[in-house]
Figure (cartoon, rainbow, N blue to C red):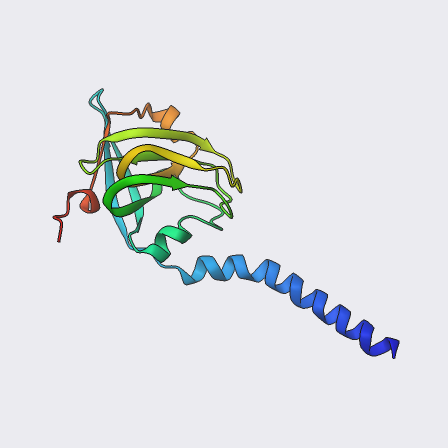
Length: 162
């Protein structure tokens, strides 16, 4: 009687371990994002170049950069929310610390959250209506001197409304 119970307990533990390890990798592999160049035009006259993935569908926006382990210094993600609105983000299941740029429908950065903490469930608020959020590796904002009032420009931010 004890043998079958022990076997099932071990089998369940092995399956649970498999899903804990495999599901994050599968989640990252299953979500695909298009990419585009993105420029940040600073008030100081600098033009900063990035390549960003585009999160424009509800599923893509919900997934974002979760489970991502590495990202190039000149890479990031742009979230397109279609219409300006107050946006809240969080870092649950996000491994990388991030800087978040909250931009209005003209691409003007209205608010910045630096060094968002990995795995945190703390709400990160745009503080005002925005249409876009750009996520970059933590520290990029300070390193490059990005400030509110600077402007993001990409195919996403310049496309015509439907």
